[in-house]
Length: 410
Image (cartoon, rainbow, N blue to C red; front, side, top):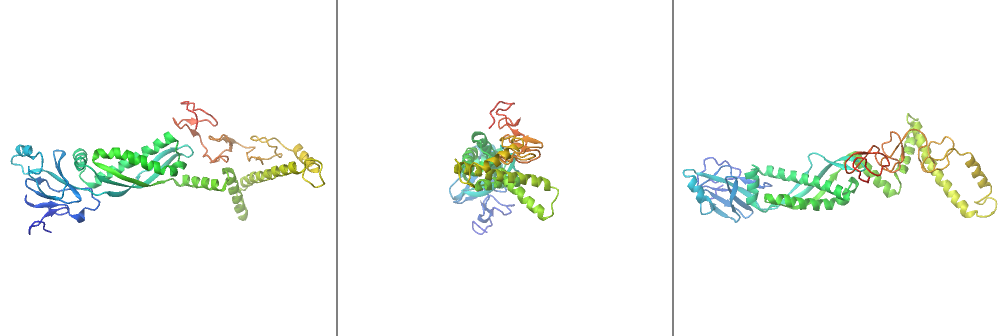
């Protein structure tokens, strides 16, 4: 390819060895792509000619700083007429032909993706430390080419586009991590709340990124498409809670239904080692159902049998006598709600609380939970010691203030 007459030119992507000072240099269009900058592979010499197009800046660089920006499309000779400051350089470098470096910078807006190479650690009230992987899109452009070249080439020694983009993506991930921590501390945002905060996260990030990148001659013009990926076990717990909320059931009802389903599968396969535990859980579920029927019967009896009624009507008479005999044969009251229990009952038919065996307190709601359970059957909170949201110290079940820092327990 020839730019001036029949002589070959040296341009981006070609070998430039042996070029003389009268050749013209330019950045070949097909070599631009997503490259933000390109450096002429050899140093600029006196009277070298460079071509700057409409969609790019030209920057003359020497002694660790950008000295001249060419922002209009034209052909420029590297002389004292076109570069401010070359007069003083010319006096100091008598006999030296190489006077500096030349860079091209694209003016257009760039769009790219980012993602966390390593998961971000987020301390959640319900799930503890959760490792998040975050992905998204962003757009950026150069607003000050002189500042860009001075900061990255002169200060950081970055002369390639990949190095600059790598730095930019690192800043995005760092600011994103700071933003998540800020929303957690100021607005008590948890993992379950993040979908509702995506728009606010994006706005905070672009605001912080603007302040960080403008001192490098860059501007983030878009930050969107945020996608926060949870670990599989946390996502499953989130999905279960969402399904229970949609169905209007609590966590204990869900667990009881699962236990009955497991018993049915075990019976079809001829039983198994967990058969006894399954029947105990089934007893809790059936007890809860019988308790509800009992309450409904009492309510209907109170509404329909206020005085003496006909035989067989809901109300006083034989039914009351039967109820009295049942109460006389009842065992101890429930340790949680006080409901009368049948002798030897392992679970309360009214509230489902376990009545025997080793139990531990739920760190969130103080419910008596069978030892070894992974989740509280009352509130669904993961079992384990609760952590103070201020200092991270372990909290005793049921406490209202942290014993280490004195902050109220949220």
